[in-house]
Image 1 (cartoon, rainbow over the protein chains, first blue to last red):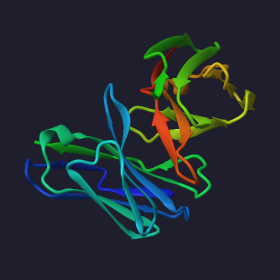
Image 2 (cartoon, helix red, strand yellow):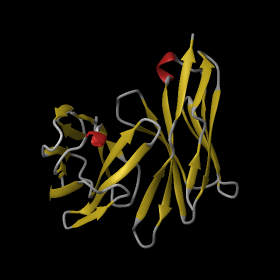
Image 3 (tube, rainbow over the protein chains, first blue to last red):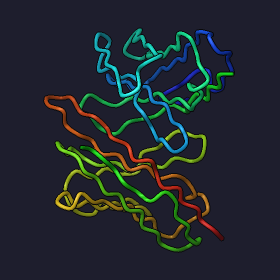
Length: 112
Length: 113
């Protein structure tokens, strides 16, 4: 089983719909992250959380919200999806001493 | 400011050696990572350098010069499966335990037979 699991793996949704992407991890890490990846733009940080009570905006948080339900779970919501949120989304975790990040398999989201 | 530069694309031949360069400009440097990412898949960790010098791990090695703001990833005995994007990421200390990862756009490596 993967250490960092994202669901769904693929999703097509309509403009204006609310959608939630979920992430769970079995690595026991405190830090969790949500990134989006677009061709030519690389990985961009949306939100990050250093523990259950600590949520921080990344560089492109507008249009997104997150919830850290437990140490192992970090979900990303698009309140009202728009086409330019079509991207590959990754959840990642890292240990509290800031070692390397471990990524989930990604969610390919298409907003039509 | 903070910036990471790496070549967009590289091509190499199976069995050969390739060097992928990464230059960066940032304050509060706190380490440099290399990740491999196959198309449509998750990035996977390859190497980490925080001190100057060469880190070797099997066919892959990574070098860092902090004074020059420069790193390279060296891939030896190239295999077709090494065709992937290679991401350079710099960790920046923001004070206390707060660190930020800055990602390069990646170098797409094509290994030809």
